[in-house]
Image (cartoon, rainbow, N blue to C red; front, side, top):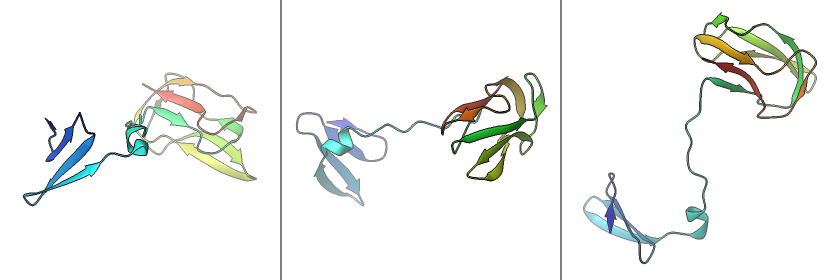
Length: 114
């Protein structure tokens, strides 16, 4: 048995998972879906992705420009609406991966910060 930090243990031979809650040990089987789940990945605030497909109307920043949190980086038209893409953190623009007129897909990396 391997002991985990939060009072859980996993028996490698039987694929049982044991939980210790208020000094009572509960045992459960791990499902195939649970074993094949996608592991958690922390979001990288320095990469700015498109949250919806659309067309880039205007780019307001260039590489090596300092930006503050909340500053407008791009204008994105999607579903007949203009969306302002803003910087989530203070930083310096590393690269701008799109230009005005580009049609983009969801999850396209628009801007990278240093």
